Length: 260
Length: 320
Image 1 (cartoon, one colour):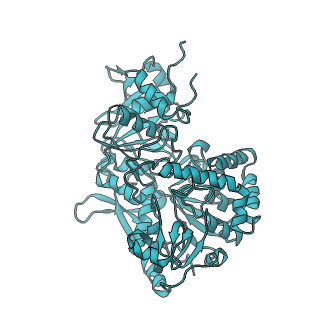
Image 2 (cartoon, each protein chain N blue to C red):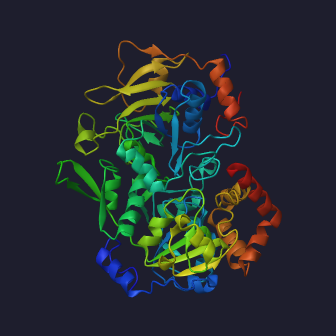
Image 3 (cartoon, rainbow over the protein chains, first blue to last red):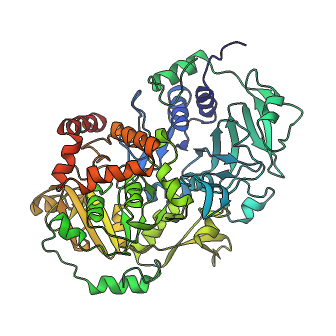
């Protein structure tokens, strides 16, 4: 087998960046989501506004000085405004945020995400995870949300143990009925492919496979039945230019991972 | 009795505020005197966020004075929360997220203390907890919001929902959180407690207004005239503040915007020690950094002045 020409994190960052349009705003966490947003800004979306939850609008992230949190000077580098954290999220509640990127330890067929507890009782869990942070707010309040995640069976579960961040809840109209009027989970971008949700039931469905990935690989790494439409696209592989830009943003490969 | 009222009881919170002195006079005091205002069982809200502008000198002194049964509220909790857990100072934490930071994975200390049931973790979304402080800062019992709806965060936090009387839509009503004590670290203040913050304001201004008692450390004490020349720079007015202490590097090893970057090497060493020895490593850390050094200056010497200068240089490079 040929050695892969990109790492899983590079694939996710490139595919994530393509989800972002010019003249839009994005709520991005640190790591791969921030790399995706900066890449989009450098490539096809020069008028993209980055918003970071620590209270940062419009930063110009310095290559090689990538933040490890949403609350630090590296994330705020050359920002245009530093509002309070509460006010930053209220921009999203008001409707100023077109896109949000989030991830999670578990995701289910309706796109619900869990970053709270795994196993056991809620108050005596087997594994206590860090919690929502801003993820719940992002998926509740941004116009469109893209989940970026490694595709593994232990993450793609039949039912999340706890709904930290609501996707489509029980499917159908349940998200809307809970009072979540505006936000919408549009895509799940994984290391295997790109997924959407069927318009009626809101169940996750395969839309495109990354180059050299098979449907069987997706089935093997998913703990629930994924809808398979008749026509499944293949994503354009990361281009040399996308990879060059991306690697220049993270030259220390802090988030891109080691190249084989 | 502190902590006896429900955290959203705006009537009790108002009575406490009306009963206390709201002076424009001298606030400058020692860290020991400031922290003497914290009582066992208090709900303490810490300013800053994650490893930014953490009131580390105040946390250190709370631990040195062996406060117990505290509830610590902070939106993103970092090493200060771990220190308070292992020191036995907290009975509960209220947060949206707790760990050190992305490179070090899920906090092993948080896992140990929360999974065993020793320290319950009350969980909110980032905005919801921010709005709890804002509701308190406004003196009202709740604020309506569109976040957290439909998620399991609503039932575990006991958040009530309401059918909007104007539109008929469902709203989440997050309850106010009135802390007994706010602990904050700011860039500068005059001796009367008028505070200026550079860079991201996080939630400090809301937390200061929400709390019954406000303790502040400042990197720099400036003349009152300087404040009066730029009153637009004041984010927390003096009459809100009860005690002020001059503490340069008062957030270290966490960051203070423009002045010093967080010491990631130190976090790495701290996390590696926990990987090797679990909470015993934190007990050793408390001896070395909290109980051992008699003064904050002695504490900073444990990091070494060279390290402080290096982190200050990084901060200048990032904010010029």
